[in-house]
Length: 514
Image (tube, rainbow, N blue to C red; front, side, top):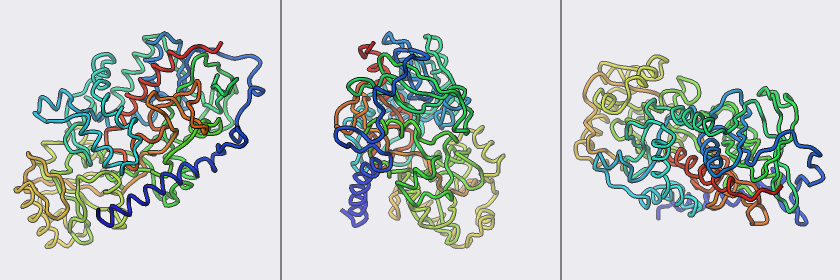
């Protein structure tokens, strides 16, 4: 084991344990004489309920809507609440890539893959901090859930893509290169089944009944984000269960800095503005255990030349393994282009300034959807050049060194082997030599919070007494443990749909408490 790997393992171990402890301290959820600090009691339950449903789902992304559909199919009446004025959360601005091993697109392309191989990739990226049962559940049920999304929900997927850290191409992309394709189809299916979906309804706390069972939620109806005090308080009974699918906390700078002080406001986020973690905190106040909160992922493929998630990731990720990434100050490569997200983000941050990735017309034309490229060029994040000398001048690179580096890279591409950084070079990759050339600057942004609520393989939340919390389930980015230290690109979609379905199914089958 290298010194770097040993250091990573040591920091990972300390980070994971520290996160669980720190999360408890900060969120007021450590046990105290058999109770959690700040835990609601039955005395705080309303005398009358404003609404009653079998299952209440919090969040309208992949996980929440998948849960709502499965809970309804299990025979439950279902309410889905969303604090924002529009549905979808991060899922609707997601890039639309769904990792699924042994999928039909791979088979058509002659790519050998298996759930075991995907699990190995997840564990490697996650530094083996993944909760094994959870990671295995995602790997084993990803393709089944992809097919459910295609055949039952009606979402269209059209092409196979690669993401850094995977051993093979296994990510299937939606027809519009956006998570909106699946989110909107999920919403339509849920409403077709009779699920009630309401926006501008913010969860304020979980309500506990006898025996610590979650029996409902307190919300602010008519909430006008970001006014925290807006809306009217209401109590909604959940006769069977509550499912939390509210996403992560990448936009809550104070909370993320508690767990990783480096993530100051200087680091922007790819997330939608409502990704602020209130539901996660509410669950911890009710006694739920959190885990690995200090593992926060930065996306290495975002551009400082456009805001938010932007269009650059859809171009950058398509050409890793087909083009080279360089430090513009030296004109040289500095890390493997196909490394996982944390590896690449850390390497770019270590450089200390934006880096540049370059692809020629063969790489771009063969891998990037023209519509996506057009949008990225329209906003100025991706630029086109007639010669490599023009690329060097545009980014103030030492031209001679840069051209030598391109020649060296092209030699690696021809041999399909990178002895410098062990980049994965694909069989159909060609030397970067065919004009025009395309280049974009890269600088990381906060993208995904791997930590969150502890769940079991039934998606039931675990309390600080180490037992499942009756009446409470969770799925998606609000949970922790699935991905360990690093989430592989496109596994979020699989995680959300797999565990969203599991959570909804089990919540819908719970015995009603009244």
